[in-house]
Image (cartoon, rainbow over the protein chains, first blue to last red):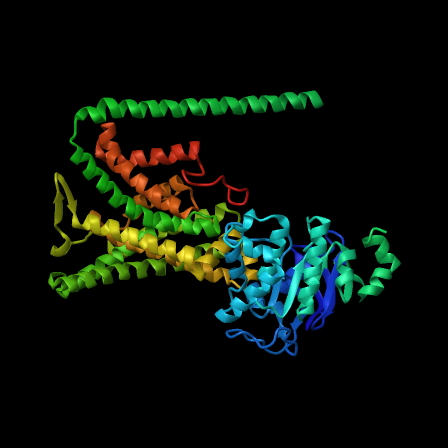
Length: 251
Length: 357
C-alpha cells in the first residue's frame, strides 16, 4: 500500500536518509526501529511531505482501502507519488501522522484537537462515527473534552495524538514513538490499543525506540542505522536475531 | 578557575538586581510625576464632569478604530511572529479607496437620497475600502513577506518598513500631496445631546461598527473551522499541515481578515478626521501597534482592550496632565516605551516563549 523506493533526504548538507526502501502492505503493522538519530522520524516526515525527498520515490497504491470507501470530498486515486506533494496534500490522501512528541495543540481544547484531525473532511455523520470510535478506544478523552490540550498528562496527550490522527479516517496511520516518555504500564496500554486499531483493519507504520514492545505487536520490521536499512524481516525473526537483541533489546 | 567564575556570576546577579532596582525607581518616579501632574494641574482646572465624559467618549471612538488596526498587527504576529509595519498603509489605502467611493456616491446623488439609500451607499463605501485594503494586504504577503519566510526575523521587518514607505510614496505619486476630504452626508452630520454631553452621530456609528466587526472577527477565530485552523497554525505550522491544513492559504486568509478590518478603519478614520492623504496611515498605524503591544501582541482580546485603553488615555491624557492636545502623540508613544521596558508581554499577554521572543 505504501512503498518507499530508495528515498534520500537531506537537512541542508547533512545526508539523513541514504536510500531507504520499504513496503507497508494493507492491514499490516510494520515497525521501523533504530537508535536515536538513525533517521526514523526523518523517514516519517519525508513520507508525510514535511521534509522533501531529494531522490527516490514514495508511492501510495490505490488498490488498498483499509477503511472502506473514501469519505465524500476525498479522492483515493490510483498510485500516487507522495514525494511530489505538500504535507497538507499527503494528509488529504489519507496518510495520517501522529508526530513525535505528540505535538498536541496546547491551547486548543481536546475537542478542537480532534476536530483538527478531521479538518479535511466534510462528512458530518462520518466524523461523528469516528469520534465515537475514538472515545471507545480512549474513554479518558471524552472526560476531558473541553480542557485545553496542554493540560493533559503525557499519556492522555499520546491518546489524543493517536485519536486526532484517526479522526481523518486515514488509509495508513504513521505513529512516531507513541511510547516516548510514558510509564511502562501506559506503554503497555498504548501498544494494546495500537494492536486493537490494527485489528479493526488499520494499516500502521510504527516508529519506535522501544524495539521490544514494537516487535511484539508488529508483523514485520525494519532496522534503521544512520540513514540506512540494515536489517528487515518478520517481527518474530527480528526478535530472535542476536544482532537485534544485542543492539536494541538490551539483552 | 571555579572561584573566579563564581564571583563573575555573583557580579552578574548583583548587576541584574541593581538594574531591576533602578528600573523600579524610574517607574515609581514616573508614576509619582503623573499623579502629581493630574492632581495639581489636571483636576485643579476644575473642568465639569461632562467635559471628561465627552473626552472619554472621543477616546472610545478613536480606540475602536485603533482596535481594528491593532487586530491586524496581532493576527499577523500570532501566525508569522513578524510585525507588519506596512499595516498602517494598508489602512490608509482603504481610506483613499473609500474617498473615491464616497465621491462616486456623491456624484450620483446617493448621499442626498432617502435614508436607506444613504445607508446602503455608506456600506458600499466601506466595503470598497475594505476590498482595496485586502488587495494590498494580500499583495504585501505574497511579494514582500512570503519570499522571506525562511530568512532571519529581522529581514521581513526591514521589508515591511520598505513596503510601508513604498506604499506611502506610491499614493503620493498617484494621488498627489493634497489631502482628500471626506464630506459627511447630511444624514450623519449631526449629533445628539445627553445632558451636557454632545455625541456626534459619526462617533457613535464608528464605535458601534468597530465593536460589531471585532465581535465578528472573534466569532470567526473562536467558533469556525477556519478560525480553529488559524489557531492551530499559530501554535504549530508543521503539525497543522499534517492535519491537511494548507498553511499558506491560512496565512493569506489571516492577512485578508486583518486588512479588511484595517480598510474599514481607514474609511471610518476618513469620516472622523475628515481627510485622508498619503501619510495618514503612518501615525495611526504606530498607535495601533502601541495598542497591540499594550494588550500583549498576539493576543486578540488584548489588542481590542489595549486599543480602547490607549484611545482613552490619549483623549483624557492631555487635559488630565495639563499639556496641549498637540502632545497627545507623545503620551501614546511614551506609553509604548514604558510598556516595552516594564511589561513587554503587555497587560494581558503571557510571558513570551522562546519561539516567539
